[in-house]
Length: 397
Ligand SMILES: *Cc1c(COP(=O)(O)O)cnc(C)c1O
Image (cartoon, rainbow, N blue to C red; front, side, top):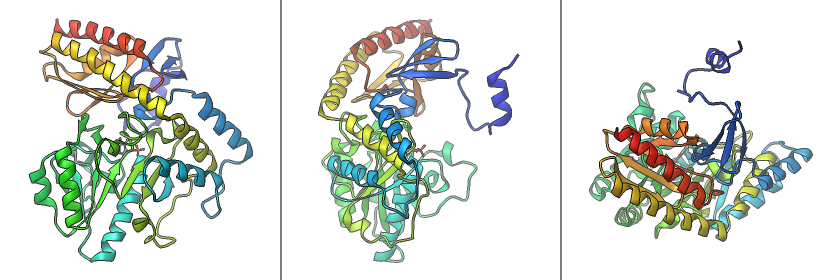
């Protein structure tokens, strides 16, 4: 008998340990497998399908566009790039954009731009600061600035000139900051790292030291951006004005697109020809980006914040009932992490919830990570909490 899992295993490089589940359809926050079983998706394809599976407005915009043309090249003017840039700028800050196809590519472009700016100032101004626990992508340059051993190991030698700072540790920041720093890369809330939010005190030190040492501040908004934390971009949770932000994941609600927004002072110093992307910002990708950004209005942000607060209440009730399992709930909009004690491995929770028809993610060392599409309501949060309680009872024994 034909076995999809077995046959796939013969032809794909085994980089992923996959869940034995084959999804064939999605609508909003629901997905169906090839046996007709329905699941509640609390992953959004890792914060990609924030505006719901098969979103009719995003799909409609892409279909209308590809009937006309889907790709030419960046050697010509593409109207969608202007509109998408204006939308991004309108929600962030005045500046100029570069389009690419993924989060790693966006960070790689921001890194190259930061190095160009640093090298223009001084031949020794090329050091990049990043945080321990960070995640910035899987290319060699972006693993070089990802502060987690498991992503770096085996690919040495990595890109030189990167130093790591402990998250929310102002002493560690000061020790690593000097005039050789060209840029610091930050996530407002570390996604892969376990839902760790930057502190106000740390942000103040970043502002002070980046000014003192003339370094750029780059926010990686690939996961925390696009409404996920209840603000349009994650950095807007703080009183800080970044020099660059990088985007991808939900920017196209499932269609591959990445982007960098840089202030004019940075962008205008980039000579033509030093960086490029063949697909970046093509007609199809821009149509998806424009339609996705238009989904994220003030009403939706209000909804994300209201649901986040309700989610936090429900989870805190569970924490008080199961204090031996739940160490801490971290809820930032609809970016949610449940930090579990070591005796309660997160894998058991992911499996237990999947068996009950809910898909979830892990992060950090033992954090259950929830990134539901913004289409959910309080009903789905209640359903999730009921099923989580069943699993808590079960793993408790
Ligand atoms: C997912 C992610 C990336 C990498 O994005 P890709 O599209 O997989 O290259 C970079 N930064 C953060 C914060 C991410 O969550």
